[in-house]
Amino acid sequence: MRSTPANPEPPVSPNMALFELGERADGPPLIAIWGSEKTDSDFQLGTRETGWHQHLRGQIFCIENGLMHVRAGRGSWLLPPNRAGWVPPGMPHTASISGVMSGWNVLVTPEAARALPSDPCVVGVSELMRALVRRAVGWSGQGRLTAAQRRVTAVLLDELRHAPHEPLHLPMPTDRRLLRIARAVLQAPGDARTLDEWAAWAGLSPRSLTRLCRAELGTSFAQWRQQAGLVHALERLARGESVARVADALGYATPSNFIAMFRRAFGESPARYFAHRATTRDGASEALATSMR
Image 1: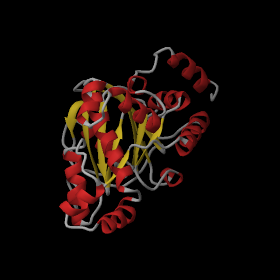
Image 2 (image 1 turned 60 degrees about the vertical axis):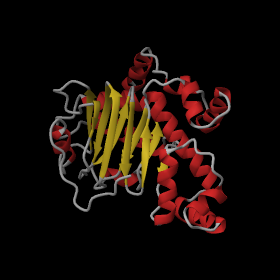
Image 3 (image 1 turned 90 degrees about the vertical axis):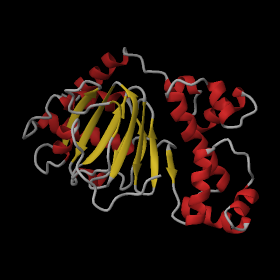
Image 4 (image 1 turned 30 degrees about the vertical axis):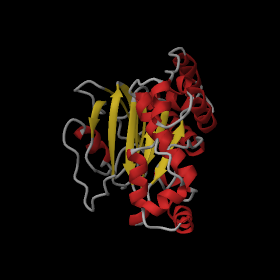
């Protein structure tokens, strides 16, 4: 995993318009942009990778298909469809975008971002949140908001503040011995070596490895390795690989064992997790947003 540069450079085209909006200290507290894979989109998606960069404003982004992998600070976050990623103001980050055809981005002033988490995270997206973002896209060019628009903004910020966090963060250590193990696990997530074997491979005692995991990762080695496996699985499933093939790559005896683990982590099967939400929800969501007028 690459380290964060000391002085990130502004990204070049195609998302220069997004970068410029992210540097606006004036204007509405929220600037919402709907994006697509088209070359003239202010928030261009598709399949691409950004360089390290940062914004004056905080960034909330959601994709409707494909997968986004965001790196920021001491870890990385996976963003599957219909989940929202949050990067606080001024935090350097980079993203790998795979097969994303549509999504949205909301840029939040530092003042408005004070009520939001201080660290990057991934949260669930409610129908109301999505409808409110669609409403906000319509006034992104305004210098001042109407009273009704300010009420919608307040509700959207409240939805974001209380949205449930999803277990899609993979912390990375700084200790060179533990980092060596972490990188090896990410390269071969199906490696079945035990904690004792990994410790010996890195020149550590099992007790030291256990202590380092708790201190640097905030979890046990087994839990971190399972999370690393989920990260790997989500990336491969998003590329269209079969559950059976992914389960085999991760060392599961049967696909059903992998599905059971996935369901424990995310509350639903891989197929449901990646299912595109029915477009009929748009009507119901718009009705909810209309009630805020």
